[in-house]
Every structure is written in structure tokens, then in C-alpha cells.
Length: 449
Image (cartoon, rainbow, N blue to C red):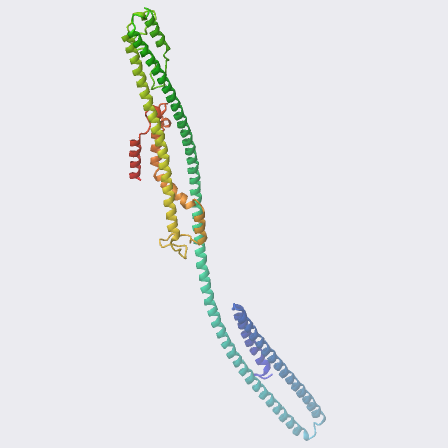
């Protein structure tokens, strides 16, 4: 077979076409867009069709060549037969020359066909390469643009993911902080409940003591009135006996005095009361020797008894005044504490209202670098509907802890029994807090806070 024939060029062209198809398949596999992939498949199909057409033409050329070879072999066989038959004929050379010319013409025509085929194939190959390169360049540009778009979207998603992670961390930190605050507020609530129960018990104790003191006061007043009446009666009897000294029998005044004296009750009024007992320098009048004592001694004795009762009454009145003052002070302290608590609640709610009235920030990050959750209308409605929210309770606890000094001073001064002082009623023993001391303590705590 001669060089430059279709059989020699076909493998090279097929290898080139296969290489181009492999490049097109590789670029089609790298594409991410579905439409671009479809167009690449269409180009591949066109290349496959061209390869099929080229193969068909090559096969037709090969068939023609085989036919020509068969024809040449037949002609050669005929020529050989004719040579064998007509070796001696003179016309053999002429027929051989004709055959040679025919063979030359056939070979020339075959060469012309091969040249034309190679030119056509080269032109088609160049056209295919130009079209493929142009399409490949456009596809690469589209891939670059899509890649840039994909990178922009990925960076946006990465930024959003970072923001969400930051918000999740902020939410976790806020949840931990609220949990710790809830635990501390629960302990504080338990402590305040215990303190409230203790104060209620103390109040009931004070009320009971006040009622008992009032009863003692009424009883002492009744006894005082009875003793005063007895003293008036005895005074009248003494005056009557002084007017009529001659009409009284010798033993009658002493007997009357002893009887009236023995009729006086013996009273014990706790720590502040004085029992009706004679002093170390005095002696109880004897009924047997009562007749020898004069009316002036009896009058002095009863005056002394009246003075003692008056002192006892004054002491009890002072104690009653102290009890009443302590009770009023307790009520006043409770009222002041309630006022302080209401003022704290009102201040906290005013701060919350002012805070929620500010315009909300679009991002959860504040200017100081901290995180703040954006406030919405539902959050404001919830804060307004709840009596004391978590933020209000926190602010209220801070304000109340600032005045804890006031509570501790009031408790230590108003209830000294709990602080290790001797057992006894502070309201009756005079250890209760006076209004001046209360005002002084309140002013000190207010100035310190």
C-alpha cells in the first residue's frame, strides 16, 4: 500500500478525534451547570456523528480500494493467462502497454481521490477544531463566572454561619447566666420567705405582749382605783375617829387599822412592779398593840402606800408608752420598708420602660462589642404583661441588697434577743429602738447607699 493512503491517515485522524472527544468529555465532566453539560453532550454527539461519517467514508474508500485491487488482480490474472496463451503473439506488448496505461490511470485516479479526501478531512478537522476551541473558550468563561458566583455565595453562607455560631454562643451564655441568676434568686426568695415568717412570728409575739400589757394596765388601774377607794375610806374613818375620839372604844382604832391594812392586796408586777412589803426600817403594825398608835402614824403609812402605788402606776404608764411607741415604730418601719420597696419597683419598671422604648438595633452585636438580643413588640408586650420579669427582679434585688444594711440594723436593734442578748422583752426592759435612733440609722444608711 502506498504512503498517504486513507488507511494510513485514518488511525491518525481517529486518534486526533478521540483525543478531542476525550478533552471535550473531560471539560463536560468539570462543568457544574446542567445546561452547559447538555450543550457539551450535543457537541460530543456531533463529533461522534462526524467520526461515524469519517469511518463510513474510510470504509467506502477501503471497499473501493479492495475492489480495485481485486479488479487489478483479475486483470493481472487475465494478463498472465493472455501472456501464457499468446506468448508468441505480437499483440502482447501492445496489450501490456494498454494495461499499464490503464493501471497508471487507475492509480492516478486513486491518488487524486486520496488527495481530495485528505484535503476534505483536513478542512473538516480544522473547522471542528476551530468550533471546538471557540465553544471550549465560551464554556470556560461561563465556568469562571459561575465559579466566581459560587465563591461569593459560599462566602456569604460562611459569614452567616459564623454569625449564627456567635448568636448560639451568646444564647448559651445568656442561658447559663439566667440559670445562675434563677438559682440565686431562688435562694434569696427562700431566705426572704424565712425572714418574712420570722418577722410575722415576731409581730404576733409583740401583739400578744401588747395585749398582755394592756390587760395588766387595765388590771392595775382597777387595783389602783380599788386601793384609792380603800385609802379614801380609811382616810374618812381616820378623820371621823379624830373628830370623835371620846366615842371610840379603847381597842377600836387599832383593830380597824389592822383590819384595813391586812385587807390591802399583795401585788407583784413583774420586773417593774414593787411588791407591798415593809422596808428594813419599818415593822408591820401589830393588832395587839394597835390601840397605842396614833392616827398620824396610820395617815403617814397610808400616804406612803399611796406614793408607792403612784410610783408603780407611773412606771407602768412609762412601760405602756414604750410598748405603744415600739408598736408605732414597728408599723412605721414596715410602712417605710414598703415605701422603699415600691419605690425600687417603680424605678426598675421606669428603667425597663425607657430601655424598651429605645429603637432596636438590627444586628445582635452592640457598639461596645457585646451581644444583645434584638427586642421586638412581643417582648415588650410580655414585659408589660408580667408583674415582675427576670430583669425587674434582678434590678429589684440589687436595689434591696444596697439597703440590706438598713434591714440588718433594724433587726439587730429591734430584736436583740436573736443577737445573744439576755432573755427579756426589749419593749418592756427599755432596750427597744427609740424614734431618734431609728431616724439616725435610716439617715446613715441612706447617705451610705
